[in-house]
Image (tube, rainbow, N blue to C red; front, side, top):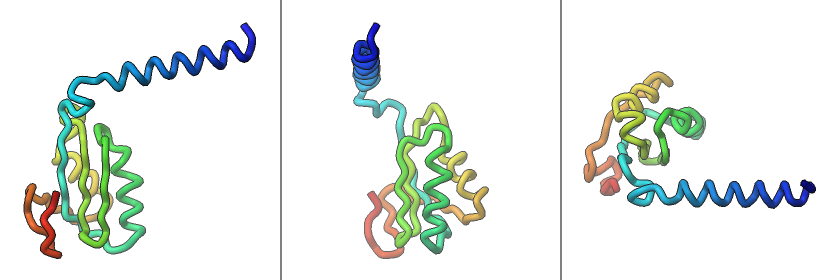
Length: 113
């Protein structure tokens, strides 16, 4: 096989495998949940530290760290982790963590999503 043929074959193989994984039932939303925590972060270094560490926790599929509101919203796979394990992961970094209920208002009076 020539190099050109190998490259084309590899691209086609990658395209086929990504198309198959995109066909996950429920648009990939099966067994996913979100949890929001109020976290005692105080600066951009805290924000980056949380982003860098929590994003690699098992089962985490999405992460939003909002420094002004001091919130961390994590989307995760329920079959891989739990809110308790995610809370513990943030606490191990030295932060105080309080779970927020869905729809609860934060300090600024904005309704959480």
